[in-house]
Each structure stands twice: as structure tokens, then as C-alpha cells.
Image (cartoon, rainbow, N blue to C red; front, side, top):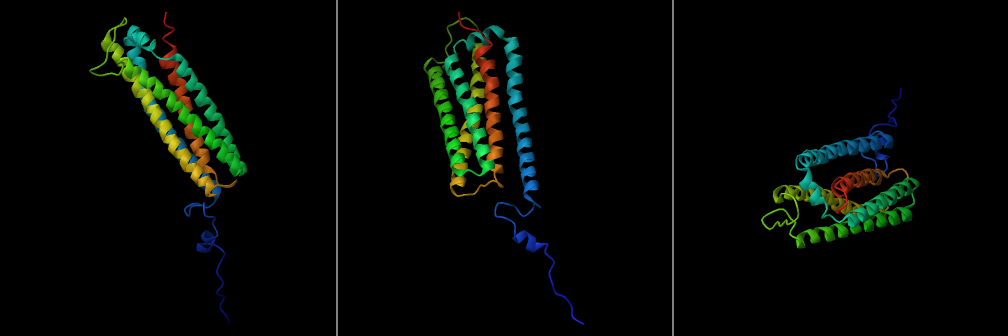
Length: 231
């Protein structure tokens, strides 16, 4: 009587057939993609709470020192802030096209749209540098060298600029991190690491970039617009 030594087509043999981009702890790509998306959404929730603290603090102090915050906002460059808003919204569009190209497995289109997003992100930071330099030249950086000669209490106006630099600076840090991630994605695209079945890193970065854009859409009216035009 013979004993069969045939091995069932599951277990380790099954994992050996997994594609390179599929991690061993997942049963299939749908499960891996769902886990990646869930992790990204949880991260976004922590970011919402983080920036929510800034927005809440700003709103409280603005209601307390309304005149000083309004006077302080009159020295912000509304044109540059508006320009950066257009730049970021456009970058969200190019990023959405990059995600769509990844879903279709079009490598050249992915690269083109990621490069556009990268250039727009760098443009945003250049404009922000121009704004910061203007504040430096006019001694509007909170600290010992802060100078305020317009109406309003210099101490509370300085508080406005403290919020301005903290909120826009933290947002700018997120943009810089995004620039680094786009460069990483471009390298991975060149290495043929993505295809129509595996594009989760590009899709999840797209969520991150849309969030960065959304935060600025709240920052721009809050800091630049609601104070009204300088008369």
C-alpha cells in the first residue's frame, strides 16, 4: 500500500507565488490596500486634531484681541497668499491626475504629473519665503526685535504674528515633507515599482497632499481675508 506524499497547494508555497509588492502578512492585494488606506486615514485624523488645536487657539485669542489681530492681518500680502492658494489647488489637480495614471499603469504620465506637483510645491515654498523675508525686513518677527508702530497693542499684535508663523510654518513643514515624498515616489516609479495592481503609496500620498491643500484653504481666509482690506 503506497502513501501519497503530495503537498497541498497552500501554505508556504502559496506565499512564494506572491508578487514582490505584496507583503507576506496579507492574504491578497485587496486586504493590503485596505490596511494601507486605513492607516493613512488614521494618520490624517491625528493631523486634523493637531491643526485643530492651532485653529481653536487662534479663534479664542482673535475674539479676545480682535482689533490687534485685524490690524496685524493688514500687513499680510493678500496677493501672495492668494497666489499660493491657486498654486496649491493646481497641485492637488496634478496629484489627482498622477493617482489616476497610477491606477491605469501609465508610467510616463505618473512621472509627468508628479514632477508638476513637485514644481508647484517648490513654487509655494518660494512664495512663502518671500513673505517671510518681508516680515523679517519690517521687524514683524515675534521676539526682542519686534517693532509695531501702527494702531493696536504691540504685545497682542505680536501674538497674532506668533500664530501666523506657527500655523504657516507648520503647514510649510508639511509641504517640505511632501516634496521629499514626491522625490521618493519618482525614484520608485523609475524603478518600475508600481503598476495597475500596486499603486497604494501614490494613492495614499495623494490623500496626504489633498490634506495639505485643505489646511491652506482654511489658513488663507483665517489669516489673510477675514480682517478686511486695509483702508
